[in-house]
Image (cartoon, rainbow, N blue to C red; front, side, top):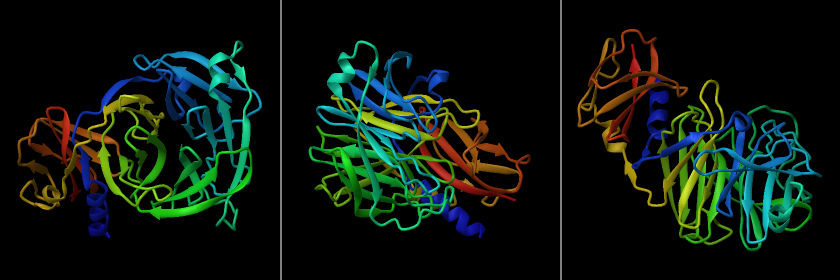
Length: 363
């Protein structure tokens, strides 16, 4: 079992983000539960998730301060999870469903013109109601369902939902028309993203989809899809990139600007604050698999008293299997005497970039 768990950690960190993930600022307390993220009219738009206000918040891209709050007067925030847009509309995904029991899944459709021109910061939406064509049971199974969703995109003629599969760590892609009405979401395909998808954005300029999410081991990732043809989003080139954000690891929202810069958001997780991040479109994916399996780099493994690291690194962090930072050191020989027995992760940095990740066992 221990060998299997360590192998799972290796798979989780198969790739790493080979560039800086810039942390801009913590969100205001009012946005601790920030979920969806959208870039429109040179501002960011976000919302809180389950039980939050029926409101969209315009926020400053530098300070994260709230510039304006627009209420959707005929909507209820049961569990808003993501935002999408096309030329004329903003789409609000009220489809969070971590028990798998909801029968009231909705997407609220908001006119961009109404959003921009309202004089009282209150607008109405039209409603698209839907269910999944292959869901036959609605028995409540908290965090044990493949019919939860926190991510979707809009194209010229369709909406595509990417599910958050608690059971198998894959994502299912469903399509819907963009019209008001009641529909069954059509299952298009599935893909093993090795984690739970929590946000999506379609970069029209680059014809590229970016997903974000985290794993059951509380590590964050991006998933890049390009060179595909709709509706088969995964039939092109796919890259999974592990990232190490400051603050909360519970990444929730992602969006691209017209200059191919991306914003990334996380919601508060225990004591870790919700934070806004950014990165450029030029993703440099570093394959760490060869380094991870070389025992001469991190030794001994398993270790009892000291963990030694060979290589040109500036800084080290040791994390629990749940993603909690436990130790930080610049010394390549780290005392681990006080750590309980179990499985851990060490991250190695060079010039503030995460360049190596490896699991190890403490005896």
